[in-house]
Length: 92
Image 1 (tube, rainbow, N blue to C red):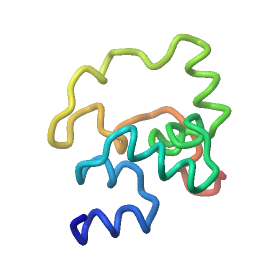
Image 2: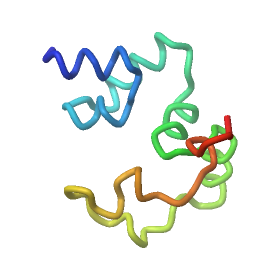
Image 3: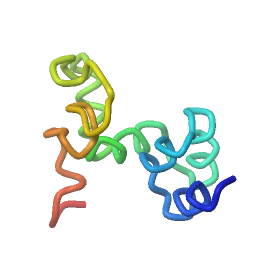
């Protein structure tokens, strides 16, 4: 692993892990080690709580609008996603 990959894992920054070459199987191992469900992990990656993520998926998932491509700082990047309160200041 590169030093950056190690730092991403130690920080448990799942989006950083993905940017440095991680995949769903790699993230599943981190989640299992930490006792986290996929819903908890996916929610954290999108700025949502576990409940917000679950409710969104039950309701049919995210709209494809603004989520159709990944690119350097594209609309689908996590920092541009409006949903979820988990990552906002003052919310847990």
